[in-house]
Structures are given as structure tokens and as C-alpha cells.
Image (cartoon, rainbow, N blue to C red):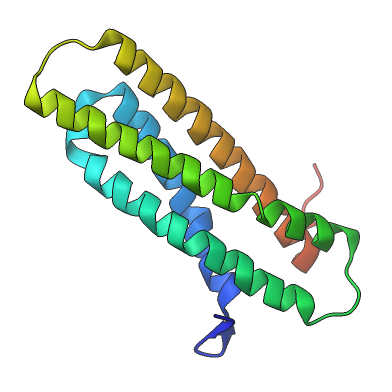
Length: 155
């Protein structure tokens, strides 16, 4: 997939990922910390994670198509291309956390009892994967923005 209605698919898919991945990571952390949020959002978070796993390789593929259209590449574009390959790992990490949250939710509905060790492990996993995914998406996106638009703001 290289274009959607004449627009580069990469730009459209990336905008979806830039919104969906941090939103999903934040919701995962919320669901891990707060059982009431988990009961309400666990299936939405799982659906978002599946969408991210599907969209990530499509965005990378569309980006590689754009990259291949030019013969010479700036160092920042090469950095962006390298970092873009990270996204599938973040996507899979988010999916794993979503599945763990869904299993935790299922266990709570079957036999409601305290599972302190499981709860702590899920919180740690959600925070580590969520924060690293957010940082990764920002780093990937920042290098892409800089490659396309240059440095926009000093500071």
C-alpha cells in the first residue's frame, strides 16, 4: 500500500499510529492501576493494540516506498528510517500487555480474589512497555518530522 486516495499512505498511517499508540499505552497503564478502568476499557485497549500491530508494518512498508523514491537521503531521514523499524516491537509489546490485561480481567470475573503479585507484575509491565512505547513513538516521529520539515522550534 503506497497511496490512499492519492496521498502517501505513510503519512496517513503514521498520524494514526502517533495518536493510537500513546493513547493505548496510557489506557493500559490506567487499566493496570485501576480495576474499574480495566473492567470498562480492557476490550477497547485490546482492539487498539491489534490495530497498532496491523498498522505498524503497513506504515513501515509505505515509508520504505517513499524512501526508495529518492536516490540521496539526509542523515536525519536515514535515522528516521532506522527508527521506524522499531515500531513493530513497540506494537507487539502493547499487544502483549493488552492480552495480559484481558487475562487478568477474565481471572477477576471468574474468581474475584486478591492477586497482589499478578497485579504488581501487570502494573510494572504496563508502565515499562507503555512509557518505552511513548518515548519510542516520539523519537520515531520527531526524526520523521525533522526529516520532512527541518528543525521547527529551538529549545
